[in-house]
Image 1 (cartoon, rainbow, N blue to C red):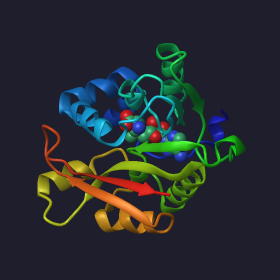
Image 2: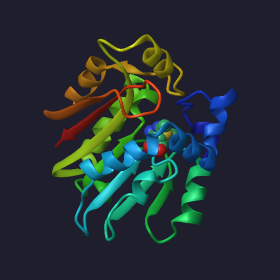
Image 3: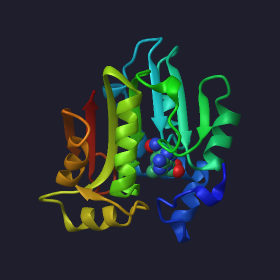
Image 4: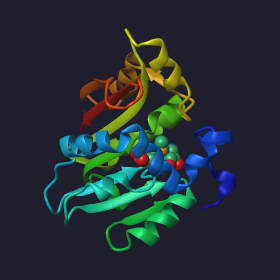
Length: 214
Ligand SMILES: C[S@@+](CC[C@H](N)C(=O)[O-])C[C@H]1O[C@@H](n2cnc3c(N)ncnc32)[C@H](O)[C@@H]1O
């Protein structure tokens, strides 16, 4: 992909830069307990039958793919060439991987195609405008009755100072309140189920899960 066209969506300096290395990214999530939480999350939202189709927007190192049942058709997109190269080496034949920014080009063959779309850890990196593009494109790509699942760092009422501080140190530069995420979803989805999770890591940290139905 033409790197000139890439939009920088997160802090790419200092300690947070090394999270772009796939092995370091995975180790970080293992140490904080993030990978265990993800396994629980994927069981809850991606308990799919063989033959189901999944689009993973911002697929990173393929954490969702590792947690899917056999026979699920997986397509993963990410802006980072490092991640896509890693996926092509490690998961050849288990999915199809694209180095692209979702929504920049509309794929006709994906319209109404996917049962479930995942965007794990994306919205808090994106401006409102880019979130609009992602949410609208995902809606276009979902089958009727399909759903989009997002998970993001969040600010909320009653949050401890430490949790607020740690959340503010995330690489994403557009962390919102629960209400802020709800407002984004409302523009494109009539039915959204949400979950605020505050005790899933070994550190005080809060995330917000939304399942948005077409
Ligand atoms: C915090 S990471 C999460 C990775 C993965 N979903 C996970 O849970 O481990 C966010 C990823 O989204 C990618 N990304 C951000 N905006 C994107 C977009 N519009 N289209 C595709 N990938 C995007 C970034 O390159 C980054 O790898």
